[in-house]
Image (cartoon, rainbow, N blue to C red; front, side, top):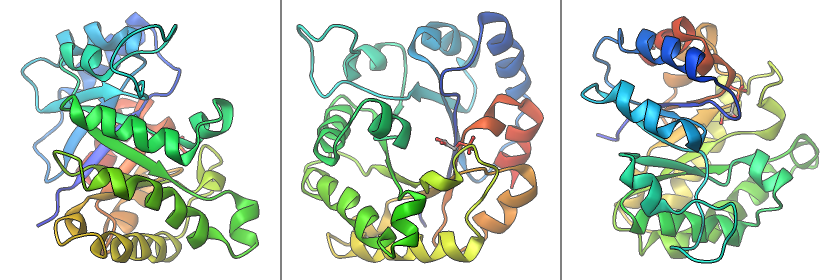
Length: 244
Ligand code: 13P
């Protein structure tokens, strides 16, 4: 049985006060079939680790350096994150690909660095609206995945993949369950070509997931949970999505 995950990506949001309210509210989470995690801005990791210690909710980062240590001003290594009890790390989010010019190769290096430090990389893939309209969605997403597959064979544990169509992020436009399932089935078959184990990689959907659409998305055969942006900042919404 494949793992299921619901992961909140807070992006660049939060204050000490608001985080405390949100994390305290999340502790009310009833046991779910899915593993639950929040990926917070790294400055909030000590607070998150303290507030979530002893709960079933995991925490992690939104990016990692591809390097283990050294003269890389502003970067944070996977082992530093691990020291704060982080267990997951998002890599290759479309906002980092766009605003930080991260290439498929950069993302693969980061995923491998995270995996080698004992973090579970959550590798994001997804096409833009122009790419979808040009009929290139599978080609783009397939190339993003392929950049990681060589690294994948060297991962000590399975990564998590998140399919996040760029046109659905923060826009209120969700991919339909059929559109999302079609891409997830494509990703599953690409993974199956690598190895029988890779077939078991959880594939999450992200992009305007809300309490009102989560159950239908998560009911698709190849959708193993969600990577949640805006709705992960509202405790009631995140709890409802986790329950779905
Ligand atoms: P939204 O849920 O706000 O659309 O963001 C999705 C996302 O980018 C999660 O990583």
